[in-house]
Each structure stands twice: as C-alpha cells, then as structure tokens.
Image 1 (cartoon, rainbow, N blue to C red):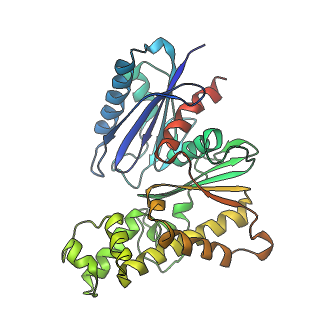
Image 2: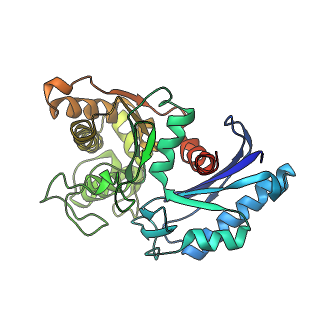
Image 3: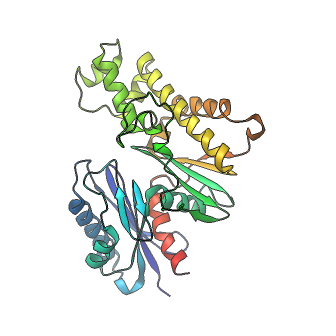
Length: 321
C-alpha cells in the first residue's frame, strides 16, 4: 500500500500544496503565488515545482505516492480532466490540465473544481464529519460550492454542479466576469468587494477608504475595507453588509433546493467576522420557508486553507480505496 498523496489547490492568488497520509497528517506543505495574470504554463510549472519540492524535502520517492489531486477554480470536467473555463485566471478554456501534469510529474493525477475538493476535505477531515448531506461554500476571491449527497461528492450531469457564484440574484445588477449581470459573485466575493469599494471612491463618496487607498486605486483589499468598517466608516460597512446579504440569499437557495443537514462556510473573507456573517445569516433566515429555518447547521470551516488541499489528495484514495 502506498503511503502518501499530494493535494494541490490552485486559487486566484496562490497555489497551495501538501503531502499527507491516510489519516490526514501532513508530512510537508508549501505555497506559491499565482497572480491573476498568470498564464497556464506558469501555473503548471508552479504545480510541478512545488510537488517536486515536497518530495525532495521529505525524501519520499514517487513509488510511495498514490497520486496527485488538483483542484482549480472554475468549471471543470472531472472525467476528462479538462478545465472548461476559469473566471479568475486567463486562457484556461478547455485546457487539458490533467494530461499535462501526468506527463510532467510521472504520477496519476485527478482534477476537479476547487470547491468540490474543499467540500470533500471538510467532509472527511473537518467541520462536515458525521454529516450525510453537506454543502461547502467558499467566500473568498470568488464564490463557489461543493456538494456531498448521501456521503458522495455530487458533480451533476456535466461535472459543473455547485456553481452557486454564477446564479443570478439580480438581473439588473453589475456585470460579472462570466458575462452575465447580477451573479452572486457580483456582490459576494473579494472581486465584488474590490469593485464596490472602487465605485464608491470614484463617486466621490465621503469615505475613509479614500485616505487608505487613494483617489484611483487599482485594487482595494478586503482587509482594507474591513479595517475601515471597524473604524466606523459607513461606506465600508455598507459594502460588507451588501456582500453578506447577498451571500445569505445564496445560502437560502442552497437550503431550499438541496436541503443539506450541514453548511460549511470557508474562504478568507469569513475571517472578517460578524460584520459580514451577521447580515449573511439574517438574509438566509429571511429568504427561506419558515419550515426550513434551522434545518441546516451552519458552521465555519475547520480546515480553512487546507480544505482544498486535503480534499484533492484524499480523493485519490476514493478512486483507489
């Protein structure tokens, strides 16, 4: 029996990886930046480099590794190992990522959406342990969802189930990166917070954000918005309330349609805390049928940044139990 797997999580701003055993114990882990302008070749090189680095660091040979699981944001065809589209990274349309990585690494590779693998990580090792019907939602650079039904990862007919970020919550809303208007991601993710903050600064609203970021910032970090909100800035508070409200509407759709027993929320934005999460829970309860109120346990991630890495690697063992 082979001892370890490698899990890789390719996000909008970084690539995280880990080498771990069947009990979920990390032997080594690492991280590399992947900016939004990174070409697929650069991301692939980073994935190869970090995998080799983990093996060299630990002295573990390829013969001891069962395989490599890779999660990436966007639409993914798991069976074919193809990235169909990616809103956060350019030039990924119909990219045969699995095939390329298998050749470069000389190891079996599986590929899936990052939220699917994060869901599996939480289900196996984190806040979703013991649940039967679980949904994991990521509240980060983007907004996505992974679904576990009857203890099995659910991908849908074309492998793209769970794309909650591109459900339309306001047909007259702002343009989303996918080309539609008013998607959940237009309001409830790091990209949306950045847009709302820059719009407010550009409209000459009186806000602390201007002194923190300047009159024409190229990018406003979520942490900066949160800091302004903590200092009582009404514009920053409104931005966070808006994002939380729409994320809660997204959760209400999840509860109405999938009726999970557990919803796990992860991603960097959740660290902002009650300013974002309180309006989220209010909107969830305001927009579901009363009979479903409290039907789902809503909890924060236990694995945080490790969820996608652990789920990606652990899925290797689902394929080869």
